[in-house]
Length: 150
Image (tube, rainbow, N blue to C red):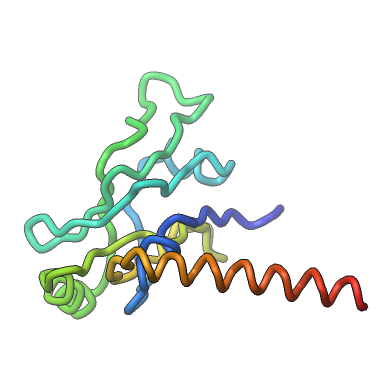
């Protein structure tokens, strides 16, 4: 069985990651089943503090096909589980101007639990994005030349 890893590719382009954390996520039964078959998306997701707890907003987990009347809502808010020390550190850092918290990866760990990698991130400027595209293009070109010679 191949491991489930759902990435937020846009986040790496839009933000510069300052610090990363791994958090557990509170899910219902049909949500974990949908994630295990890869039916989730991290596009346009972000994290927010509500009453000292960290919540992920706008994460899409498709309704489970075999779930009946107790199926979940696709874009509901989901609570993230971190230690108290990590929560305080993240909350203080995210209050600084220009910083936000974004989910970067949703995966199933070796114990069968869903985990989310989140990053304290600062938004990139337009010239930073152009620089990222240029570096990506250069790497691709170098790989292409290496394959031709090898």
